[in-house]
Image (cartoon, rainbow, N blue to C red; front, side, top):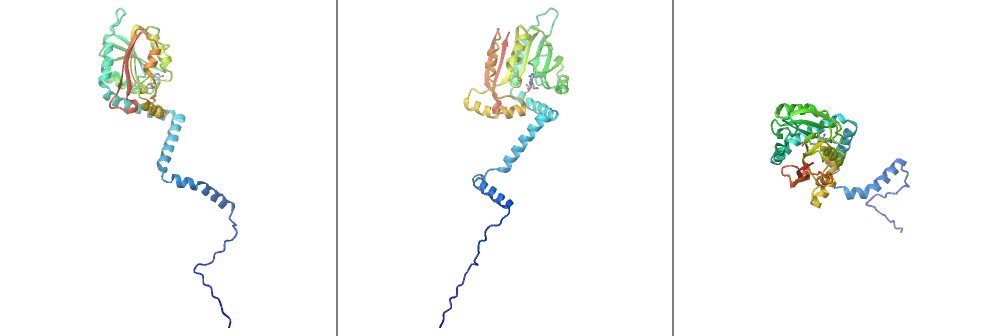
Length: 286
Ligand SMILES: C[S@@+](CC[C@H](N)C(=O)[O-])C[C@H]1O[C@@H](n2cnc3c(N)ncnc32)[C@H](O)[C@@H]1O
């Protein structure tokens, strides 16, 4: 009697055929194999946010580089908005600084007003702080489009007589004679201009002997940890607000050798972004 062996398989037998996949499939497989560990590792990263940040950065840079008009409009609006917050936060410090102008005497015969140059005047952020009726102002501002806003601000502050708006950087004030003006004012401009040494040289040149330079600027923090964060964030601040976070303004002033000496105060400004909070405010005399 013959016996029959019956084999039953619960799973169908799959015979692997030799691969006949197309070239594109092979490439796809290679790529997905190459990225497999990456996908595992970085799966949890917030890719949509990272993508948004990259797109915003590339977009902003494109606007900055290739569309100067829109960038300037954005820059003017952000400067205006920021300076109203800044003035609220540093009202007392600004008042104290600008009151120094009351001590300056017009020295020429027949002149009742003192001649003041403000560099980086923008839309006139400081007009409200000038003491009444003793100032004849020359504004220096590289962005011509600020003129409209500056005119509006001057309309609201008739106590300041602005004689002229010089459009250009304070690195070159050649239209102003040597020893011509009684005072120069800079708020957040030494931290914005291209060449601080050159600006300070020009300020010293145009000031009369005994004239004063008033300044209030954000500075690099004396705290190394905050200074490190400022280094990291400075390019972004420069782009967004035109301000460098890492300038050692007291050192620049010292190296400018104002012969009449310098009185300054380094402090932490409250009520403004912490990266801008390290501040210096002072008077340098020629
Ligand atoms: C941060 S804003 C400060 C504006 C204003 N002084 C204030 O306190 O709000 C810097 C200003 O300096 C101007 N600025 C930039 N580079 C300059 C330069 N080289 N000379 C003069 N002003 C400059 C900018 O156009 C801008 O108006």
